[in-house]
Amino acid sequence: MSDITSGFDFEQWVPAKGYRWCSWKELGVTAVWGGDDRDPVREAAGPGSGGSDRWVLILDVSTEDEWLDRVAVSLAGRPALYREFAELDPTDIEALAKFANANGELGLWHRAYCDPRGAAKKLYGASKDDNDPFTGQTSTSVTCESRDVWAQQVASLRTACEVYDLLASSDPKRVKRHLQWRPTPFVGERASTHLPAEGWYFDTHPDLPSEAEVPGRDARFVNCGSRDSRFDDPVEVAWTWLLGTINERLAKAVSPVLARQDGRTVQRLAPRTLLAALWSQLHGAIMGGKTYTRCASCNRLIEVATNLAKGRTVRAAFCGDACRVTAYRKRKARAVELSEKGMTPKQIADEVGSDADTVKGWIKQSKWGKN
Image 1 (cartoon, one colour):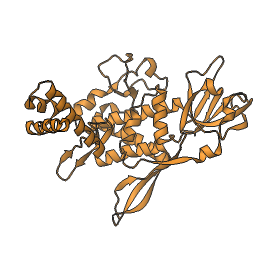
Image 2: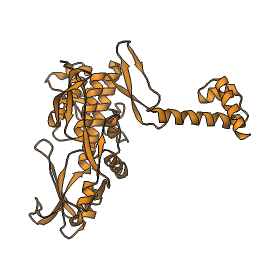
Image 3: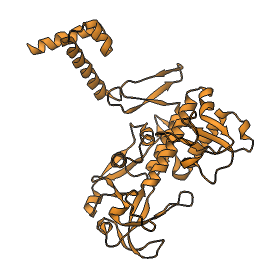
Image 4: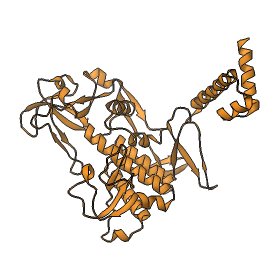
């Protein structure tokens, strides 16, 4: 029996009509409630709050037939989906909707309590006799996922990916530059009253003042453990935080299962939600020493497989044959275009990344096609 975890299986059903993000104002939301003791969601509209900047993800279905019209979505062949999720902009509602419709919900459903006279009552599965947990008033409730929760999950996974990339670079100086012991916590929006006066902090922009707010900056406290941890090696601190974070995420919604593969018994991970599956992908990347690059044609993230036996990295330029063919045709068309502008085959070859003889063949084929 092998003690090596060999991937995982995850599949969920997504309605053909998909999901959509609704503002609190549109649904007349007065509160969102749910989660467990570790991830509670307790949001109320508050006096005078219109809810126009707060959003919930709902099933975009109104009938049982629409709900039953579903398609199975699998993560097979998409080992870098967790990276795509970590790169999402939580303020871009259209991008969040596109991800949800392609992959399904995260699995962090809550209840949105809405005005019983509003649009929520028309949604499939709406409960029309609920009570707002804050006010006790009669409400229509629907299952939803909060945009704020999505933002928190994107930020958490993004930080984990950034720390892993630092560690995968095998450059201790880079790790020490971005992970530093600070005598005081960050200030501004990143400040929090529960943070200690000193500790390890991760910062994507360590050269900027702690109060500086710039797009893409991620700066946060890293809880790594021991009282005397300021004397620890930053690389070990980073590993301790990263592995602890992943273990905590997997413990919530992932179970180990045994399966047969190629005539032997292997252990697999069985995530119960899409979010757990994304963290499982990061687990697999670490166990396999994997990194990622982008397809030269469609810009989709693709896995860089590490060949441990030969001690080298095997890089793929394209995510599949379709993109490889598309890129080839573009290079060919570009070569013909440059030829018509008077460039020599040698100059064209340097421009499109080929050789002069191949370029001459493309140009000749193009002339034959015009005759």
